[in-house]
Amino acid sequence: MHTTVLLLAADAPAQLLPARQLMAFTLASHIILVPMGVALPFITLLMHYRGIRRNDPTALLLARRWSAVMAVQFAVGVVTGTVLSFEFGLLWPGLMGKWGDVFGIGFGVEAWAFFLEAVLIAVYLYGWRRLDPRTHFLLGLPLPAAALMGAFGILAANSWMNTPRGFSLDSAGNPVDVNIWKAIFTPMFGPQYWHFVVAMLLTAGYVVAGVYAVGWLRGRRDHYHRLGFTVPFTVAAVATPIQFFLGDCIARKVFREQPVKFAAMEIVWETDTHVPEYVFGRLHPDGTVSGGIKIPQLDSLLAGFSTDTKVIGLSSVPAGDRPNALQATIAHWAFDIMVLIGSALILLALWYALARWRRRSLPASQWFWRSAACAGVASVVAVECGWIATEVGRQPWIVYQNMRVAEAVTATRSTTLWIMLVLVVVVYVFVFGAFLAVLLTMRNRWRLADARQDAAGPGEAPETDTPYGPRSSVPSAPGEGRP
Image (cartoon, rainbow, N blue to C red):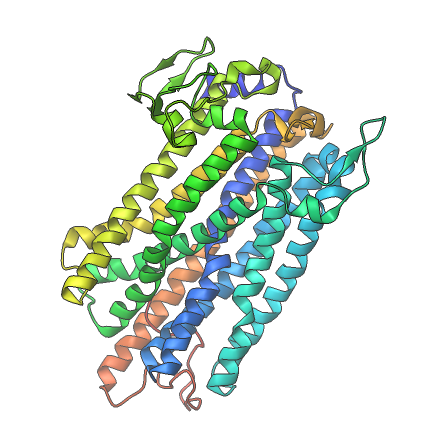
């Protein structure tokens, strides 16, 4: 680890390393929440629709409880997202000062979407038991659109950093003649956006389904757990092969638009045809690769559907314009882990689809349920790896081929930044600890409510009142019920 830090800090301002570590930590923490923030509203409304359509109180109960989780997650996301917003200006003043007028519109869109989503979540939560079922559902429909709009803004900014467009440079090197539409809809925007959106659906689906898969493994095999598993897992299973196709498309887009990043992700040193594919492996500063599994000619074949495809190597550009050997290895491992997890999830989705098609029921194998319980965590790891591959593979550029990271970093002393990192880590431990404690408390209260329901017998509605029924004379917390 010490060697890694030294290599990353070589030939860079002293404050660059702590600034990177602080940004990396806060981004990696925030991105854990993003799938639920973007995709959970859609999954919740899907369950809500099922409940209304089939007059199913269990589906309505699940939707109501998921909306409570959605609200708590959104509150935590407010904290981590606000920290990130401040960090862009505090840690990277060179970026925002010079280029903010070009790509800052993306952050503006995200801010508006954030406030809109906050209002819509409040209305949706308030609507349970207070609004007509159809009206309540219709008021919730804009929620997924608001979440997608927020993703639109962030991905517009990030894709611009990868393929900057929509400006000219004056004699002093400052951007002029800004074209907002070209700055938003860059060559990487479409592939990045749809890859991201489907990844969020996939991840949120597997995370939510994983909770009920654990319950299934523990013997809870009632309609509640079956429905709680089936709806989100089906969403994820449908999204998984789509995501694999989109991932292949975005990798090929990187090959065309950012050939040096592609070379880093595939640890290609020399420009050549018939380039082999390495599964894992380590790139050394002299261009040699050790370890891993070498598959002859496969990299050229995957990049251009022909073994004669020429792949640009890292050595084609000066050392200062490309990721170093360590950074390339990190990007490569992150990319390979993401692909392997995606491949495993495709097999899991096929297993599920085959069982539903042949037997019209859920798979019976305990190994399926163990795998389903782990799929959520694996999906989050894949999301983290995708971010690492994207950002580390772009080094040393913060704006690809226009500004280096070292040129954008703050002049704040490195000691101050290290102290900030420690403080942020401590705060985030408490924030995420509180988040987990709230979720566990909600789960326990829901289980107590369900135990009372089981004792009362089938004549009583879940939680004493149905989600659209009258309030009971017996006081009950709004979030009571099962996990």
